[in-house]
Image 1: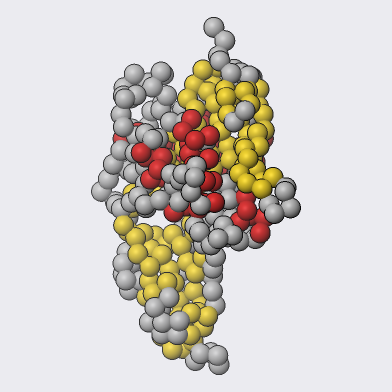
Image 2: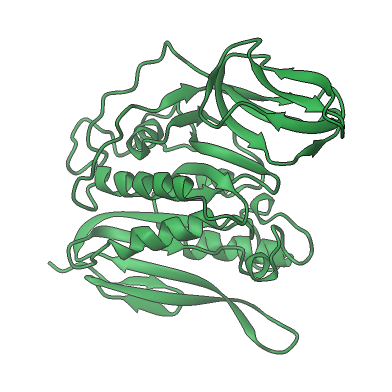
Amino acid sequence: MARASFGIGTVRVRPGYAREVELPITRLVTGAEITLPVRVVHGREDGPTVWVTAAIHGDEVVGIEVIRRVLARLNPRTFHGTLVAAPIVNVLGFTAGDRYLPDRRDLNRSFPGSARGSLASRIAHLVMTEVVGRGEVGIDLHTGSFGRTNHPQVRADLDDPRTRLLAEAFGAPVMINARLRDGSLRAAARERGAAVLLYEAGEAWRFDEWAIEAGTAGVRRVLASLGMTDPVATPTAPSLVSRSSSWVRARRTGILQIDAVLGQRVSVGDRLGSLSDSFGKTLRLVHADRSGIVIGRTTAPLVNRGDALIHVAGLDEAVEPLPRHHLNPDLDPDLDPDLDPDLS
């Protein structure tokens, strides 16, 4: 029996086809319509429905390229299940060159939104209704905020068995057991019963190739682990596990020279950099106050006392990865499809 078509907005996508859909958001004062671009890949074969989102913050462009590369390699005629991809969620921020919406609201603090609320609330409601609400698994793609860059990492609820398996399948260098934030897409999707991975890598307004490659490979691995595509290469090493992280902060104002690099393993007391005055006189050295791995750093040369400099995640060396097996309940009888998937 052939699959049913997939409805989104006012459009229906037939099985074995991919289609781009424009979901109306608002109109400019000129009367021009602003829409949310979505591409649906509706496979010919049965399978799960997965959504992938990027650029919830308008300056986070790495995820846009990740989605483009993932979509370029999918064939709806051989695809199992359905993929709903929204590469630019914050269309207004992206086109204006801004992280936030025109009213300065953070879209990722506006979920689940309301059809009658503010612009941010309306966009959040649209995304929840037409994208998130249609899938049981989601991947939300982010980068560091302005002036910061992040090592490739997945943030998720690692205590939820199915979410943990998805995070392991993604295969980022680090996976972090991260708490939920009120108003975030992850928190709202949690209430809808979705299992969500948040991918962080790179810097705002930059196409960092290393971040794009890791994100593209990770999304493709998740799709393969769900039985939606053919198997793909596994990562060379399992993800390191972290359950806590903190920023090393500047103890003086000065010009920053960072010696540590993203992904570097550090121990308490290790030198991470230094602060100097405008003539090069060293004012203070920067040392690690915890052991772990560097997952983020500032890119600003001038820092004030108290500014966040280097983000270090502590490593959970004692926890062994869960057994790797297929995440598609239809193909894996040991995975309980009724588990309440969680996210963070």
